[in-house]
Each structure stands twice: as structure tokens, then as C-alpha cells.
Length: 96
Image (cartoon, rainbow, N blue to C red; front, side):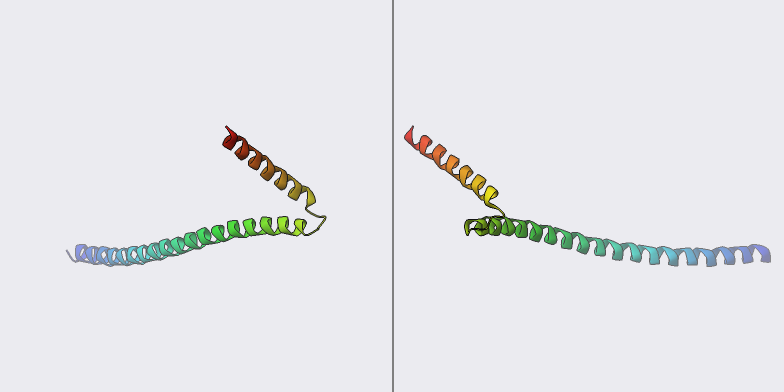
């Protein structure tokens, strides 16, 4: 009978240890999920900033070429031609 009591005590001890490990792992999992959410938010914000900076860069490139820079003259001419076509299209729409 005492062997059965020892086995039960051993099983209870192991079960307590397992429950403690489960609690620790659940807390770790919750912490990691929270950290992942923060990282996802940061990535989203940085993606928005990158898009904004790309637009500003393109605008500055066009403005620089309008000021006489030879680097981006082709891009500027293409943009101006595109704007002229859009204006012509608008005028044609108004004439109809």
C-alpha cells in the first residue's frame, strides 16, 4: 500500500511541475503575441512612411529637373507630355 502512495505522490509532483511549465509557456506565448502585434504596427507605420518618402522623392526629382538639372530631363518631359495629353483630353471632353 505504501508503494501506491509513493507512486501517487510522485505523479502529483510531476503533475504540479507540468502545470507550472504550462503556465510559464502560456505567459511566454502571450508576451510573444503582444510583441508580434507591436512589430506588425511598426512595420505598417514604416511602410506608410516609405510610400510618403517615395512620393516626395519623385516630386523633388521633377522639381530639380525643372530647375535645369540634366539628370532627370527625360522624366520631366514625359511627365509634362502626360499632363498636356490629360489637359487636351479634358478640353476635348468640354468641347463635346
